[in-house]
Length: 576
Image (tube, rainbow, N blue to C red; front, side, top):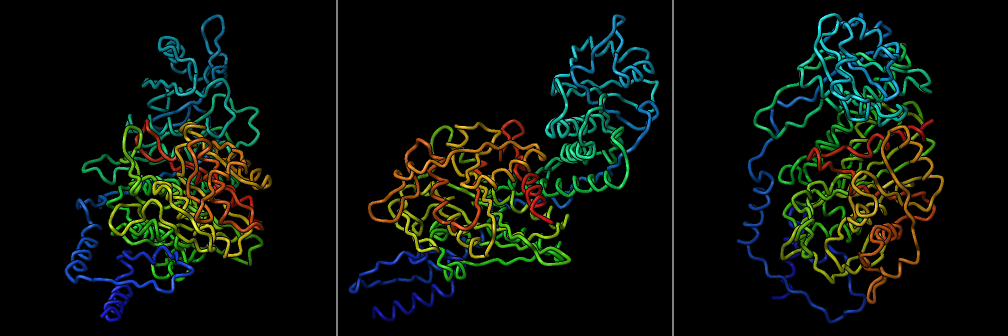
């Protein structure tokens, strides 16, 4: 009888394993010496039927669909050398520093461009700046509509004390696009009051263009009503023209497209963006750029064959099965000299499991963004697919799943076994991201890559340490740190290198397994990085980026698209 029941249960597991991770062997943890152990399964057909119906229903929970009328904005970007007073369009946006607003004894602008504009407007621009106390501080703006120019409106946009950073120029593009939305402008021009001394005008134009594309974008996919942006074209004046600048503007649009994809993925609710849907989106990227990208999506059985017990343990409680995503970029026109891997945490929802997120500040309602690392990876994949850098092969890897609660789920105290054979005592089911990353990192190393960067919304401790705008960087490699920080200088995104204090590993030791999955509250982001290090081959350069803070903007109540532009810059720096 026992044999027949076990046989029936085995058949059931073989048939339904892709949708029902309800058996403890998914953890792949085995007792080494248990000769008398016998397992007995009782399978109810009714329960199977109900479970399958629940799985089907879960995919359309709430009947929410993306608006079929939704279209991403399409802008025509151009650089021009033209007198600002002769440009014709809806809005002329002038980026000004505090120094640019200096006036002479007659209260006239000293800056040549502002002086020329003000002269055409009869001195009104100087009066308005004084009356509205516009001093050129970062974030300030004022827009006026007056006759006298080819432009219907003129706006002054503050850049702060000086304008030299990518962040400032992106901000100018975003602010000008926002003003264009308010004015329902279809054509705008952006010019700097002072462009002398800029070391790389093409990079400045690229940053302004990127800001404009992102500034006009609004994620209205889930709104019943929304207005389409009127903005059609953006001219960037006074920073030169020619093929190099055209190439930079195309690059800005490609990266912005990746950032928009990343934002849309993070913004999507968990009842729409399931692990299966995330895998579908990844496959769509590969199909779109099939000349350079290919996709491999592993199901639960295939992950089990690879002994990914740590990852599958996290997924075990959810009705939505896990999907392991692997995109591969191969450069056109020859072999790659370097192999890189980008690994992203892909928890499409994190309830915390049995250590459920409760109480003030737990942010359970925002846990759709726990796949922010995977959004960064897939956004970068989209951009790389368009840019097609040479000389470098890139693997984009995501272990997608949900961390839920059910009778089949991982419990505190369980011991799981990762694909490199290391055992982990789960002392907190809400420290699940590192469990999925463990198997993803082992998989990445098995692709014979030279360098790995993993990205994850991993710890609240990193937000406490660095605040909401800065990501923590952990790596034993000084060379890799220099590469990524050089890329971030160009992207304008903020990272800070954190210590990997080996003595903190003491808090991660278990009495019954190789390690626990979380240590004490103190130094939580560091101990999390030390945990991940256990699953990376020593010959591989590796970096962990904890982006729990900057993945989301509380002010905008939306995703930021963080890290995508930095990742793309890093890949390009490694290309030939």
